[in-house]
Length: 461
Image 1 (cartoon, rainbow, N blue to C red):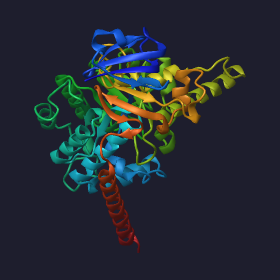
Image 2 (image 1 turned 90 degrees about the vertical axis):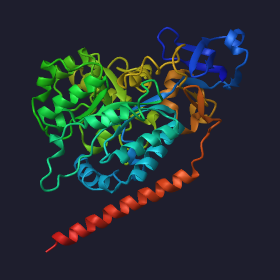
Image 3 (image 1 turned 120 degrees about the vertical axis):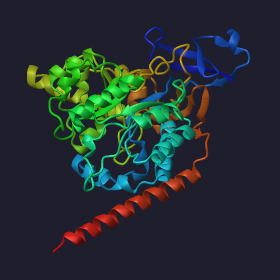
């Protein structure tokens, strides 16, 4: 199957190709074959379906580099919780109520929602998998959705029962990584591939940290870990990780608060990537996003929704939040240091679009496959209907994409050459899935409330 997109403003995010007014993109199979003008004479365009974009904006598919997709059924439940309340209610309460079927429906519908919002690639940080059945349910949900995903296999974080070790003392399960690599996620070129969501130095002992880093290195997997949010389990562990030469582009740090300036400089120099969740970090109390620090040291900034139990799954909103927050911090610093705001904005909208396209792909280790509309790369792209009132007039297409776009403008979405949304409509049935998601989420929330009410009664004198 081949498709020729015509009559579009093409924002390639490729430094050599730039933006093309009245541009065209030719897709054959799962690949982008050509980007330019007048491609109808291209040898591979003769049998292509011609899709008139109506003057819309064609962009690379968005990358949501960090989301706990299993929480889709809990939308709104955690919206008023601080980080400490989240730990108490979710990891020590709600998470334990999920069956494999709950994980499956939340992951599948959450991934479909990402496609609906223009995200074609998802870093799914799955840390509610107490059994292999939970893990397999999440992978099944991702595969059935049609999204491209790096499935970051994690581990649950409940309070230990009598006689059990704390989760910070438990190494990542090698047998599960081997099982997945020999089974459902054996194909490194597949739409859904494997990474590791490890505890990292902030949430595990030094011994566990070193074992988990070594396991990821052994299998050549991206190792992603949370950093920040309370006191570290093993203060100083990062020094040992550095001393052993374990940092590199295969290491992804989520959030990043509490790293000092020297660490940030060395980490970025070594190629470590950062996945920042600005809206959720400001909402729950992680601290100010580290976007500016990563930029200052030349590091890779990627962005993620983090928690749909708290906020929207729309990556355009996440990019605006990251851009606005860092510009605000920069403006405030300039006022304090120079007595005035900067002469020009410290961050461009083009850079912000990079955070949710090419830089997001770098954080997930797949920028050679996606992230820009470059011939030879996978055909992951999004057509935005820029003729609607909220986007007109388009004076600067990149700025319009970042500052004006909403879900209402996401007209068509393609992943690996296959349409997942077209003409404003998802191409998969969702009605039953929505009903199942609601039933699952309502049941889990109700069970949590009942348990907490019972616990309150038991401690009341």
